[in-house]
Image (cartoon, rainbow, N blue to C red; front, top):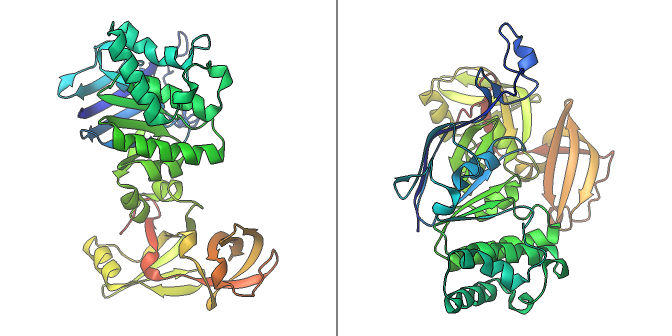
Length: 391
């Protein structure tokens, strides 16, 4: 129902009186925060550019303090935009009041009126629009049926579970039939089982309503399962934009590689890239891995030379092999169908995810010695200085 464009969006929080940046202040003093400090103030969001297609589901993801919620609040009109342009269906929205942007927002804290019933909570935004009683009843009943909360319409929020309250909060948003539906960490207050259920509910909801979604979370599992595209942020900057598969298979830099994927990717700083006549190999923990022709061509095309790099391999791509690198198992976690092995090899931490079916009758416990390897084609190679992906 709406195309959203963010062009060079910035958000600067001005210094409090008497705390402006002092000339000659040492750089190390300013880096107490990861956000950039300027004469204007603290820069929370910088150079944010994103085109969101009609009915697309976009997820903003990143660690706490990266600027994702601030960006969402600027789209909602709850935060003033310090610079750049926000357009919805080609119309500039920078100075348009929140109520006139035709958007709805679902908050982390539900934000339900405790003295109202579920029906009254859902009716409230429609009554403000002075809709007819029949239209209001029809919209509320349809939204309640879609979300499976019809039986709770006469209850007060205090009589509902966390998951039910979140459904009501979503229902109150979708009855407005907004052009853009904003969600700010809506599942973070729920337990793990309920989060999984609600993720499935949001996927179903997305298929039933024609709305553009912008969803904020710090949980990369939510981002991977919900988003058409993921926007990964750090310190107010966009690190990478892509489909879940793109950012998983081809992370742009070391930060993205470490943030996306559970357990986190294994990193081997100090690995050596060896180039000989356009053919490349990686010396990692004393073992040399010959790279594929495709990898060598990609590196040669960029003119990459021999030298120190940071190599990365995902835990699910690590396998046990009698001819591999020797490691000591520090912790062995049985996860049902998988065994998570936390190991030390050459003074570096390594995590392997091993299917229990591959172990047969072998028992691996803390203190055991194993050998591991991986296919070179699954290696990720990062520049030691810029931390950018070399492939």
